Length: 164
Image 1 (cartoon, one colour):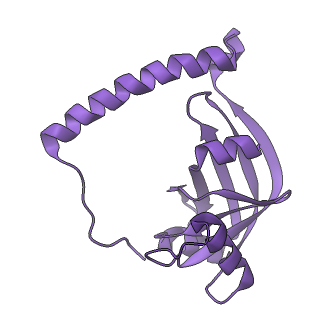
Image 2 (image 1 turned 45 degrees about the horizontal axis):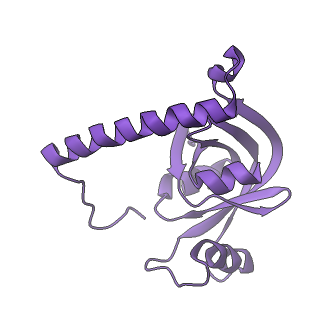
């Protein structure tokens, strides 16, 4: 599980809005805190933060793209804010001691109560991880070329300031 998290660095966080609607948001700073906790930084996630304040349940899905293998982690989440030791340690781990250009608003610490594997249906057809990784390396290169051509036509997206 650690290897997948360390390779992916991207997860999708599922929360529930106060009116009961699902909300899924990508998080690019997922890390392992210890054997029973994961965390990510709230860089620009006021919706996720508000949802967790209302209902502290969270599910994270992490998938290593080339192998199409990952995990779903679920449990209760706590928010930690600047001035808290958990906040300081999490920021240090993500930024490797280099101060971030924009400070995170909070750290979300998930107490993992349930973990389950996520596997591509390709595994059910007898394909193994080595073959899938090779296939997706090639496919990823083709997708990158397609997206680069798109960007050449429309130009890159630029955002002046993230939502807080």
